[in-house]
Each structure stands twice: as structure tokens, then as C-alpha cells.
Image (cartoon, rainbow, N blue to C red; front, top):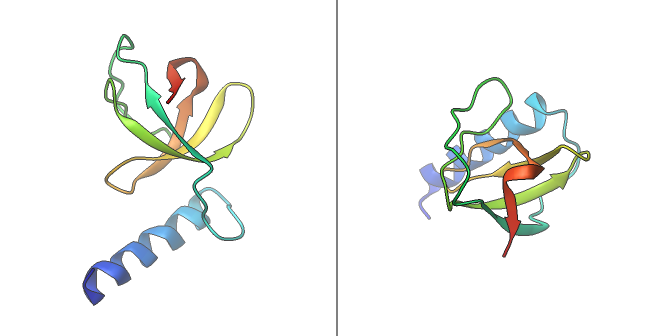
Length: 87
């Protein structure tokens, strides 16, 4: 990683912590896959855009309906539990 990429990731992490009021260090709990049979959804607000079969990093199990995740582009957002499958 170059210094520029490292600084960009740090900035994105700070923005995530501010937007989602997340305290502490960002740790990946597990990885889960978006159900290939689910329809693709556009993100909006605090929701993460979804692609069928995409692997997401789980940051926090927030409640019974949603999980806080990060995708491969290092974007953060909420994902419905109903469309997630364990690996």
C-alpha cells in the first residue's frame, strides 16, 4: 500500500465512525455472502448497495433486521439480515 492509499483508507474509516456513531477500532467479525437469489438493491442513506453473490465483511450485528457491513470498495452500510448467507 502506498502512503496515499493508506491515508485515503484512514479518512474513509473516520467518516464511517462519524456517520454511524461507531466507537472503537473497526474489526471484521466474520464474512457473509449476499444471497445469489436476492434481487440487487441500490444503496441509499445508510444502506449499502448489494450485488448478488457479493462477499461482505461484517463489522457489527446491530439488531434482528440489519447488519453493519463493509464491501470490497471499503464502503460501509446496513444490510438486511434476510439476504445474508453464512460462508
